[in-house]
Image 1 (cartoon, one colour):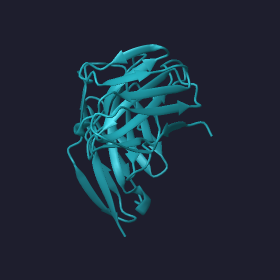
Image 2 (cartoon, helix red, strand yellow):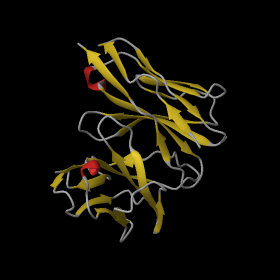
Image 3 (cartoon, chains in turn purple, blue):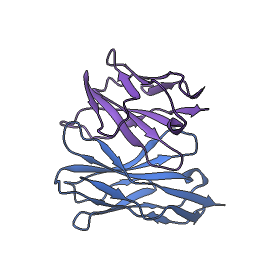
Length: 116
Length: 115
């Protein structure tokens, strides 16, 4: 089945130790998103790619970076994780709006990051 | 800027009963989409139902239906014949009709279903 796959599902890292989360999709969607979701909160958009064009949210810390080497893959790099970065990280995809496009986002199962 | 407000942090319903989750939003746009997403504990966020703003008819998906009041900027979700598997966090979300419109979430409503 076409889907959005995130790896790893669970990651524990030490304060300041870089971590990379990955996302792959078989939906061939143009747009890929990274959201941060802290406990009992709504997901917060970090950035998104429209094809290769990178769009950073204004309040996303510089500590967070992203790469999209091709249509199918997108990575979230946290260069020096702090305790406050403990969260679920959600990857999502969508098609660009157009005729017949209904606009929803398709989510992966998330990567739960714990920073010790 | 668009905002989405869910005023009920938690709700509870008896199995087989009906429950309504509230959502209001604020926007000056005319072209947009509204969604309800379900997020079970430690599980994937999945789409429950969507509504295009230009459609007057309320969307329905099996036991799930919405009451879309465009003038009032209200978008409530009704779950009929509630089942234990409906227990989850429910997020109301708004998306602009622009080509790269971001999904803006409300804070969510945690729904419990009592057997």
